[in-house]
Image (cartoon, rainbow, N blue to C red; front, top):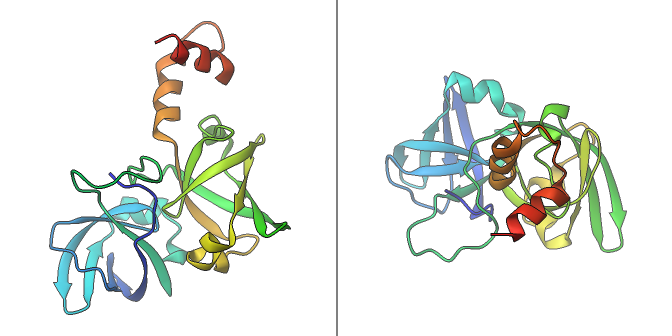
Length: 203
């Protein structure tokens, strides 16, 4: 389990045969889970100042592998008793998104991210989403895309400063949105998110 708050930006030293070696200040142990660009991976080797995680063929098929070079986001798994911030992130990437628009909005910047339509149903206005492991709030939801407003601090301290129109990103939708949708998807009446809010408020 993760929070979507990036611990640091690690340097990619190599990616070969599914083994990704990173240079970082953080010192994990073998067997630890760590989110790299939002994907939960297992540490298989540790050396002075570096560690290696393994990416299965399935992971390589799903993830935006072109972003596993240069610098990457890392976040170690939460420990019992850790302060909870951000939102609940599982480290299980749902799909890839594509940056389709970047526009200044006052001192902040609006990013519009497109995604496969099948996953749009899990995106909720003012809900949470993880972009390459970064916990963010959704402003608006469209048919096949959504809008985020990113503050300067987040841009300067994450890969967002490198994103361009066309950049692919790892997306993990909100866990609770997925659960609620699947709980009610067989309901004969098509539920809106207002309906879901009313149901949840009754408990």
